[in-house]
Image (tube, rainbow, N blue to C red):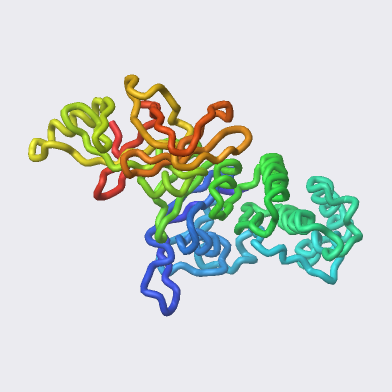
Amino acid sequence: MADIQIRNLHKTYPGSTELATNDVSLHVDQGEFMVLLGPSGCGKTTLLRMVAGLDLPDQGSIHIGGRDVTYLPPQSRNLSMVFQSYAVFPHRKVRTNIGFGLTMKKLAKAEVERKVAWAADLLQLTPYLDRYPAQLSGGQRQRVAVARAIVMDADVLLMDEPLSNLDALLRLDFRAELKRIVQQLGTTTVYVTHDQVEAMSLSDRVAVMRKGQIVQLGNPITVYEEPAERFVGGFIGSPPMNFLGAEVREGTLRIGSQAIAAPSFLAEAARADSGRAAMPVTVGIRAENISVADRGSEGTLDARVDVVEPLGHATLLTVDLEGQTLKVQVPSTVRLETGQMIGLRPDPQALRFFDTETQLGLTA
């Protein structure tokens, strides 16, 4: 195992004027499971490829286990990689696929067989060692790819969206299996995905990327509950965080013609801004942090139900709050109809606030 130290990486691809990575710095602790999360084109795969040695940075440095590997070829970095495609050899049996890298390193046959048997047992592939990839399911082929990576005893394991080609049920099963395997091995892992559920469920820490930069780094619960900017709140979560235009006026938070109490730090900030009668803010709130209450009761906002979506374990509402749309998740026992007027009570402790112009988070 080894830590990874990434310092001030810049990368621009030929023919492009945009930075694929823009001054990215990141420290991955020894044995940590780090997830790089973001939309397509945000730079996460480019960053992973530079760690792997498949791409070279224009500026910056990469150290693995204290050793500068910035310009070393991939084979000199002692790492393994699992790709989005299975990348297994169709003409080789499972045991040969798993042991291919060991054979290339010219390990003794007995040692190769021992390591292949260990990896096959860990990934529940022992009954399939003498089959060809065409005789396996998608999930089994992906397990072969992971087995081939972990059998190398590398310092670092890199994964580039390894579950994206699996169907929903296989992805759910294999995600739990992958977490178990990586925890058992304790290998330093960097995992790239655009799927926020994968990021939340697998990572020790998650680095959210946008336009070639890391915009927030932290444990998954903190990133979910305390987004550093509006983009993070809108990207993570299903449904994503609701955002409402509001203003702070005379100690109250006004959303349209309705008002609830403003937190003290916002009220003080508004009073300090003597040049304006009201301070505009964007309010963020998760669907599960809003409850249905009696209209007109303290701390409630009136809204109209536009869509009712039963999900089994809960019901998802799309409601209209004076022209602003938001999602509300309520228990499945709550019975509501389209067009019905209801009271909404947002949890004051779950409200998040963002600067209307910069979209950066506002905190006490």
